[in-house]
Amino acid sequence: MANPHLTDGSVWLLRHGDRDVARLTVTGADMPWTFADVEPLPAFDEFRAVFADQEQALEAGDDELFDACYDRIRADLTLLFPDGRPVAEFLLHVHADGTASWRWTDEPFDDTED
Image (cartoon, rainbow, N blue to C red; front, side):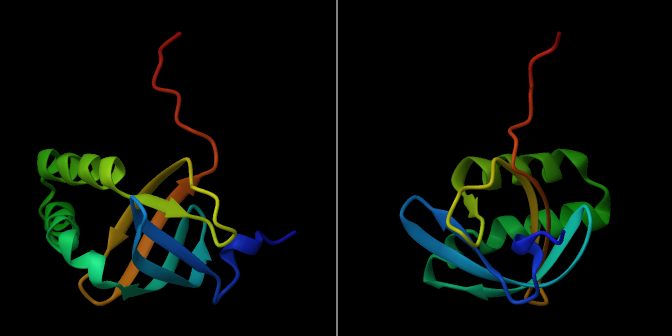
């Protein structure tokens, strides 16, 4: 059974507090990655630089900068499924060309060691 969250045209939301930052309209999926067109909303401007820095860090292989960007994105932003539920964990890239790609899980990562 296909995952309804991955249907082309389904809309995920990126949110900061109670403000919508961007709408992500799914264009495809190649698990574990989901791909979308990004509709930036006015609140996106506050985060544009961190996504640009993340993309630059990825291209340059700068793990320290990449991790700092990831930490900021995860601390400040919530990704919502099309049904409005928050995604437990995600790794989101918003690209300069107006597209996004992300991996997600609906279960929180377990950071504890046994």
